Image (tube, rainbow, N blue to C red):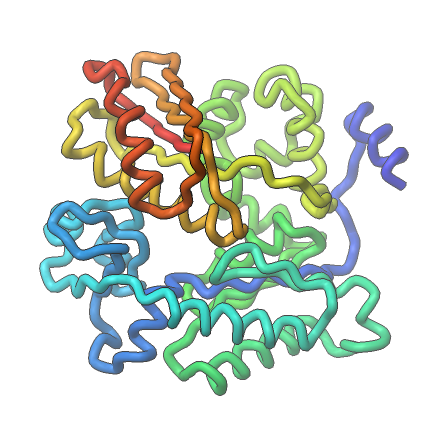
Length: 358
């Protein structure tokens, strides 16, 4: 089947998959802030921001829906956040609480299928292939509603979860983001193109602003344009790698993201709202990058010895620096201390549009 699919990609004739959706993506969106609102009833309905440590220069690493509705975003500095939401309640993170919620979520998910993959502390997916006739003959929508009810019963009524159902992991994650909070959506052959017509390119998981710019340069401005572009154009004008064929299949509902990999590095990137070289504006975002990279590192049970800092400039081109240390590290403080030394070696007069740490 894969050989036939590869041949179809070569000739540009791969149809949209008609497979029955059997992947469920579950996302406790705004999980940290929502968990605090569940634990502290007086916070419910109020804008809440989370930081790893409380200080005037701290960075928002999670925000409640009430805060997001006022424009507060993850990665924003506290000063900027307070301008948008003067009544913002700032809290320091409490990891044991979130670990308990994570364990409860994983326990519930694993009761429906042995094929469960936790993607992070607040999201995961269930693969129902091979279980439909034996373990779960009910519709996945019915099971999703039951999962929502169980989370409320076991964790509390303030807990809201977004669930997406689709034929592959990519579309299931996309479906989980369609109607927040507390959404439940299914993407299948019959509605895929309609859903793409209502989204922006950056609504697609994996398409940040740098990839959006690449796609735009190939006259691809919407997800529907993306879907209708041949693998050949994607390969030669956008991705210049095997990623072209993967996106060509992924967009059509075929699974290309289930291959096991050996994790050799972790990283995050941040696209700036406006180009700038001012350090007081860059540092809160850079601090957020270091903290979220540290979170990802620790979630995978790893430590690091090398850091790469990369940035792209408004005028074009980029800059990268790498350093390896003799001893390993894994805490936010150690990552930030080392990465900041590299960050400050950048060409400081150049305006940045994007920065990343690996």
